[in-house]
Amino acid sequence: MRALAWQDAPPVDALTVAHLGDLFDLDVQPEFLLVGTGAALRQPPRAFVRELEGRGIGVEVMDSRAAARAWGVLRAEERWIVAALMPLV
Image (cartoon, rainbow, N blue to C red; front, top):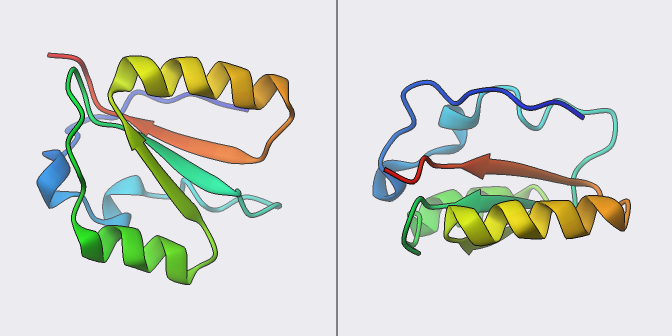
């Protein structure tokens, strides 16, 4: 497990898979991506979600506080997940 600062996070409505860099370069493919959209829930572009679902990776979108809590619960269950959390400000 690792955590990296997300430098220059794009606005949620402009999010692309390319913005996530090597997040999916793992030995085991994650079940899904948790997307934390900052202080409020906002939806990423539909094309972004479709591209990940086409790879067999689900997308769960929530505000960043809820995503951080979900991360802790899901990792405690030893689930294979990745997360991209936008800053709260």
